Length: 101
Image (tube, rainbow, N blue to C red; front, side, top):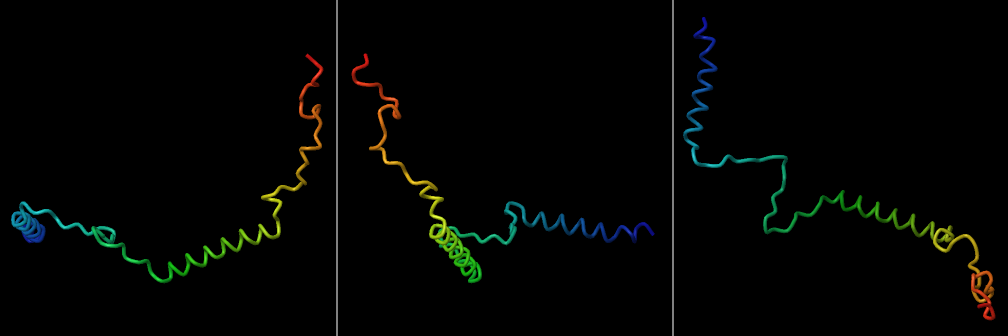
């Protein structure tokens, strides 16, 4: 009974050993993660839906920027009017009077 149960695993072990002896000195072939290897070749273009999605997202981004620049320019220019520096006095600027030593 034990011999009949062990025949399958023994056969599997012997076939693996014979296959490894045949392939001695060769490097195993590795095909992992469906990676596209592009050695000295141009990268393959992305699928059409990726290009369309990228264009849509980029268009939405620029619409968002220009919309807010047009309707809320204070984010860039500031909320208040810039003061005229020619109207500032020496005292406001912290400059001492000329006759003081």
